Image (cartoon, rainbow, N blue to C red; front, side, top):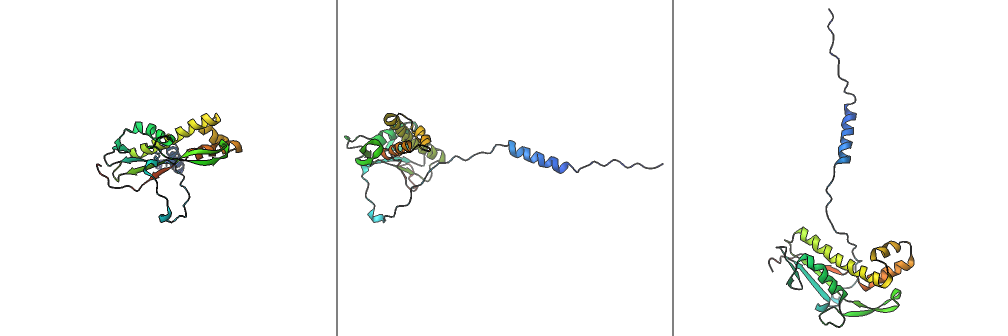
Length: 201
């Protein structure tokens, strides 16, 4: 009596199945995206350090985040939720208040010629122990303050939001001039110092 061989399993398509499973898991798996900041750095200035003009203290808005994640604004303890309002007040300024930033006249054609512009600068200082979470929150609030001020100004002067001007500027030269005018009146000046070991101060 002849002995029958057991049928073999065809494994030729196993590689295809494994490849399809790999593709499936790659497509369906969600990847964590690191949070970060979008920044366009200014071009380098060809000015020797000794020739850089000194900035008056009244023109600087100091924001300090220490190692305990405490936030000090102009030397006073402040909640992150209050930072945007205080920053907006400083950015807008008041020419008649000697405790607020100084103003200088700048030629802005879209606004009809000379226009007063604040010399405001926001100085952000962090401790080496400051948490990344607080750092991102502070940055978001400061950038948000500039965006709010620019948006309110654009609506008041041109009847369009700052975002609308950004979109229209891609195709319209007039909108581009208006957008540049808003940026000229409220330039985003956030100066970030090198982190220090500030501790509990």
